[in-house]
Image (cartoon, rainbow, N blue to C red):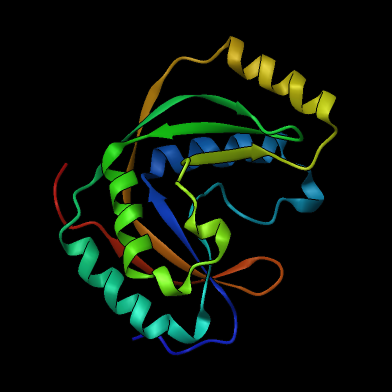
Length: 174
C-alpha cells in the first residue's frame, strides 16, 4: 500500500530486460554524463499528484491484472532538436494510456492530457549539431526491432534522480 506523498509522481512503462539493457547502453554512450542520472525509460505520465499515491497504486494494481504483455515495435528515430529518441508503436499501449487519462482526468497537467507519443530518449540537452549528427548516424544503421512492455513503474520525483515506489507487472499473455 502506497502512502500519500508530497512529491509528484511519474508513471513509466517497464521494458523487458534485453530492451532495457540495450537502451541503457545507448543512453550511457550518448547522454551528457552530468545529466544522466536515470535509466532509459518510457514516460507515460510526467506529473501525477503525490497525495493521490494510494488511489493511483490501487488503480494500477487493478489495471495490470487485465493487461497483457505489450509487444512494442521500435519503429524509428526521432530528432528532438537537442537530442535523439527511439519511437515505439503499439495500439494497446495508446489505448491503455487513454484509459488512464480518462480515469485520472481531474489530476492531469496539460502535458499529461496530450496524446501519447511513446519514445525512449537516448540523448538530450546537447548542441543541436551534435544531436543531428547522432540522429543521422543511428538512422543510417537502424533496422526496426521489437521490445516488450512488461508492466508499469511508479516513481516519486524529488528534483533529481527518481525514487521507485512500486512496480506493477502485466498479468496477461501477449
